[in-house]
Image (cartoon, rainbow, N blue to C red):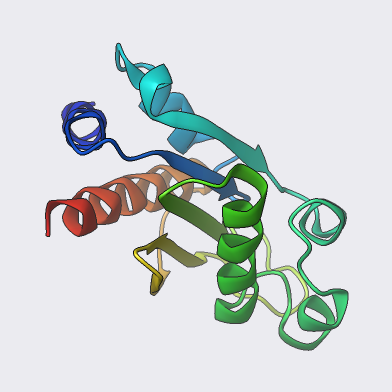
Length: 155
């Protein structure tokens, strides 16, 4: 929660806005951000794009990209960032996609997560493989993305 307080404070002090597109985390990142008083000054919203159809129809991720690379890929993450940027028109956009298990899906290993942010016309894309339960994977991925947001906006 302390990280989110810092994020909201920095965004407010710099007159910046933020939005996101969440898949594996199902809205947990936005939930953490809106717990901070004053978040409504800077947070526009997040789209939970849990199914590929939402990525395709709302974020405008190309279906061929998903077919070629799977929904859990760096290419789809990058496209999710672009889609959320177009949808919300904010200074900073975050996105996350991954596989929390407990079983592998479509050849995607359990624990594989791609997360990133778009800020000042640059995308910061990360790949990480987490271990543990489904809840552990989701929680750690959420925390890592929140840490990344703070790290980038402090620069």
